[in-house]
Image (cartoon, rainbow, N blue to C red; front, top):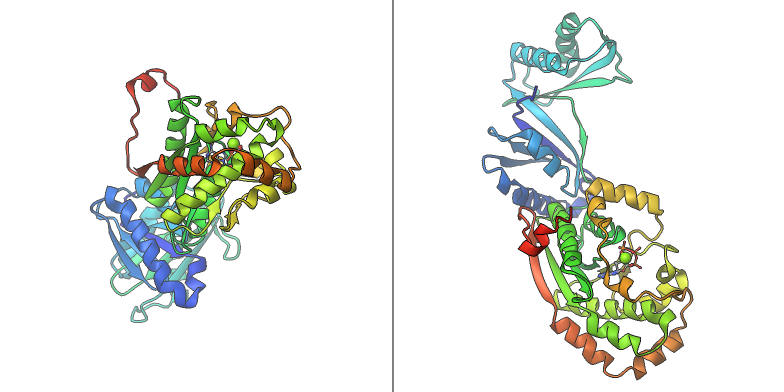
Length: 409
Ligand code: ATP
Ligand code: MG
């Protein structure tokens, strides 16, 4: 049976302790929640010290809770039943609440009452006893354990109403979106970069995505895959700007260097330069990549050193010290894994050399870049040729007929 809840309670985490930033952070979380609630027109947000309440007014808690669990800065989420602050009403609601849970014997149990409204006639301590008595009578398999209960029924007595709940579901945590500024994420179609983007957003960064494609060498389907990945990220952010950069000319130029093993180093540096230009246009102050130390040739420390020097911006690599298994686990949790493992080729896989350098030499790279004809112009042209699309969380993605027919799911 689906319970009818009256409210959803949202608790702040780290931000609650961030003294003077609290107001700004609460406002950012408020705006984020408000954008998500456009899909739930009857719901109303109410702010209280260290907490938000969503008054449901008939909207479905079951549908809304998973959305609210994506809001950064929120530590936990509880669906709540609200009743008048009268002892008989509280006990009746608690009995009903518990009976719907169908707890199987034996269950260690505790009532945790809090008298927030000091005008209420019974203390918190008395309320624990007054509420748990009838529940123990109803359900003989319940056993009180105040230290390690399997089931904790919380009762918050307030002046206007009393709140009853038991579930405390995890929120996304971190800092509210945008409270730490803006960064540009280099979003490939792989497993890592979407996870890096989510991790950056969770630290309070507003993220714009840049994707390099080599159309017509890479297919439209590869681009769609990236749009779908950005759409998943948008479900955490409300909306995402995605910059699609034509990279074919730059790549073709690098083939002229006839230095196969340095191709990836050269391409990554060009990507960083282009992304830095876009970051400047968009007033973003950092670049984010999905690099993880040692994972592939371009992510050894010497490679990171030579590649990273192509930009003056801080290069954030949220996954740098993580194992692949941990990254995969996160990508499953945030909902990008199934998209990431679709087989469509990336721009780099087209030019992948047999043995990419794990220890590129900066002097040689600088030399190649300085003698390649018109590299700066190609980079400029790629920036100018960039197409920007905005993907909203609620968008229904549709692609060309031709592509739909191929059923790529
Ligand atoms: P990912 O799974 O994110 O593709 P990866 O392990 O395959 O990572 P690489 O392909 O070496 O690693 O890419 C390293 C990082 O460079 C990526 O995480 C991403 O941030 C960036 N990157 C690579 N290819 C592209 C691309 N086509 N467009 C945008 N960024 C890219
Ligand atoms: Mg990749």
